[in-house]
Length: 191
Image 1 (cartoon, one colour):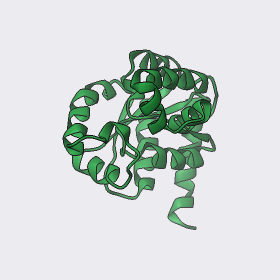
Image 2 (cartoon, rainbow, N blue to C red):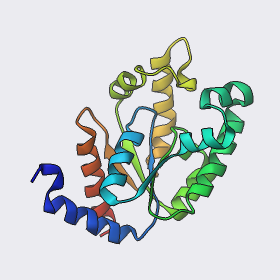
Image 3 (tube, rainbow, N blue to C red):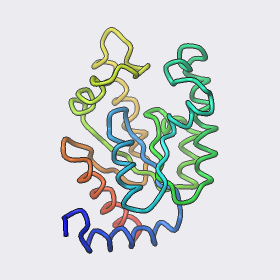
């Protein structure tokens, strides 16, 4: 039996499923924190459906996020993001990865806090910058100093992310380890 199929791991997942009782599990944090990767692993372990709010926004708008930012601006993107997240929060048994700015919006944050369990995947600047540097589709980082911009976003957003129900450190380890940390933190929080 492999480590990933251990009876202890299955028992922990089953206990968490019971404690969550269908409530959505929402991952918040900066771009590059691992919300999508960890979210997929959590959903698989918990037998839940994984959704990514950015993908759902693109489907609803029939545009990519960079196109929405370019054609409609950030305020219109945030309004659409809130509408999509509001719709998704009505679904049971989901793990939802949100965009980096979603939880910063007070209305979106209130929706999450009233209807879901939120987990902040917290990562330090160097880990985030290394990860986001691999992709060029980050509209907020299309600046002369992307690392400085990311540093400012961290300063602005981390106090808000700290309002999440749980904080789990995202670091340079296999994302299965971070998913296991999330399960442990949730079990502790919901005991």
